[in-house]
Image 1 (cartoon, rainbow, N blue to C red):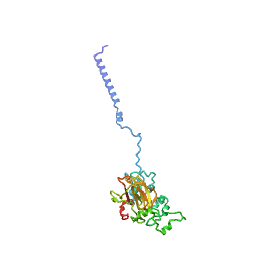
Image 2: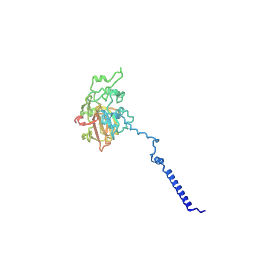
Image 3: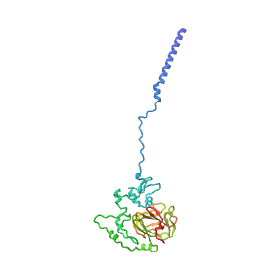
Image 4: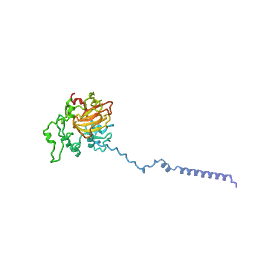
Length: 321
């Protein structure tokens, strides 16, 4: 079938028109205005769960007391024993005042009470820091000096109503007691020196008979270094109660710490053998250890006297030789 020229032209024009119309329709469907706006919209986050706020770190025990008198903030390297020694306290008392379930665990930044609570602070303040204070008030104190009729913590012992206190007559009429042989031997050649702290009178003797090979230097030597031979006796320099006997304090070896009252305590380090135990009452001149070289380069006794935890020169309190 043959079309005339004018028929072919008309058909060609119709095809072109239909093609153009189809192209316009396809372009409109591929890029509608609505689709472009949806593509530009950011992803929806309203339905995503909001993460919970990170809770602040809980304050360490006692943080509210930081900086107050009578409190101490734990520093790196501290131990409860070291803190107690530096503040002239029994570590057991410090643990009790702070309700420490595990005295071997203290945290950096933790704030500890390092003075006894006042009576208003609660019943714990009224309880004696050591067992059976009556045993302290009734035991005789050998050697020269005043006979004490109160516990070693300087507080008067209490007794139930209607109970006679055996120590009262002694306090009213003190009678000098004869010294036991060890004390007499220790003091006969060295004499004794008396120290007062405003409330208590202490009589000191030298803890060992060797020569002083290193004197007191607060920056390098917090006490006296006394020479001797392994096994030489180490004597209690004054009446008191053992608050520590062990080897947990680095640099001191086998160590004995004796608390004499609320002001003074003494430390005896590098011993070969310890002859006393924690919480034991000792008397001036009593043999409490044997000299040794634990945690030291040679046999020696490192002896400290601390007044309210601060090291003082023992040579100024001990009697002249």
